[in-house]
Image (tube, rainbow, N blue to C red; front, side, top):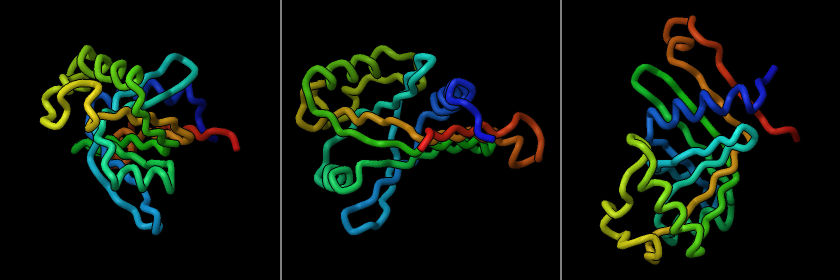
Amino acid sequence: MPNSLPETAPEFVEMAHRIVWATVATVDPGGRPWTRILHPIWEWDGEQLVGWVGTSPTKTKVAHLGANPYVSLTYWHPSHDVATAHCAATLLTDDERRTWLWELFRTAPEPVGYDPAIVPAWDGPLSPAFAALRLDPWSVRVQPGAVMVEGKGELIREWRAAG
């Protein structure tokens, strides 16, 4: 039986923010998968889990999300801790959202927080090269490495939206 989101989300956020970098897959208009490494930050308010990525709105990414507005992302740690989310993805380029996200990353504690200005193409939150990618998961899975490697430890947590 799947866990509830309130049972799963805090463990997912803890693992994601500890690992920091996720492999993220999109699907191009021809149905072919593409992967990249991204640095999401997650917000959990007790009811809703939302991920955010500061990213460049490249032609490739815009085309993929325009044709298939979904991503699958996986965090992996050498201890075999794994966290996965399947999400609806929305690329946002409005000034208010980009400024908000820039500040969120700039003021968040390390290791998930960082100064976005370190990316050479991003000369500020209103740079044409900077966009906000919103991630709304419909499925989240957290698997501590001890479960996979040793067959013991914490239980796997998994949540799926109804429908």
